[in-house]
Length: 94
Image (tube, rainbow, N blue to C red; front, side, top):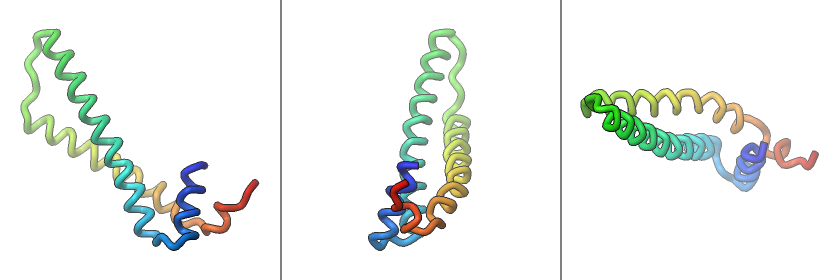
């Protein structure tokens, strides 16, 4: 709800719809990178403690890219819904 009002304010002040969508995707990508890094670090620690072999760099990279792409595709629908609403409607105090 709060994010919708923020994007409604940006749109009312002149931000384009494509700028708002790209801003949402950029924020999601940033959070995804943090989650991917934390997940890979945690799994490496667990595998080292349990004396299991670490997966190869190719596998880890492919898994990270798949996670990032899936996250961004899932975000696209909500980004388009948020930016398709009228800015005045989002700025109303209810």
